[in-house]
Image 1 (cartoon, rainbow, N blue to C red):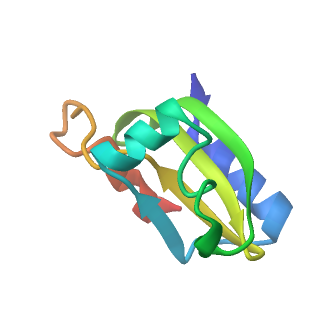
Image 2: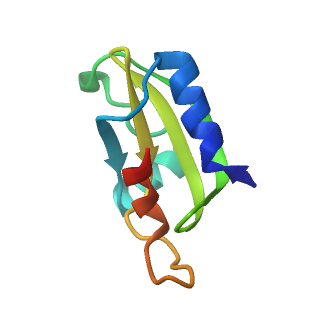
Length: 103
């Protein structure tokens, strides 16, 4: 299990960023691309220069667990990628994906 604070630290180390301006939250189509191929948005040539910095699996957040999160370098900007829009709810009833607001 990865703690979401590891993402915060890597974001700061690689980009010098104290916060994020962009996140990519997907749905069933992008989830399928992530699981069946090279990944989204990496396969899109029109999306500019992009590199996956790291893939985090089983991330523990204050709002519940998130199965997969990517930190992506898109044209030298940090982007957090969550390849689904619905996550299991924890006892608070909040979606685990909402933790993006804390990044």
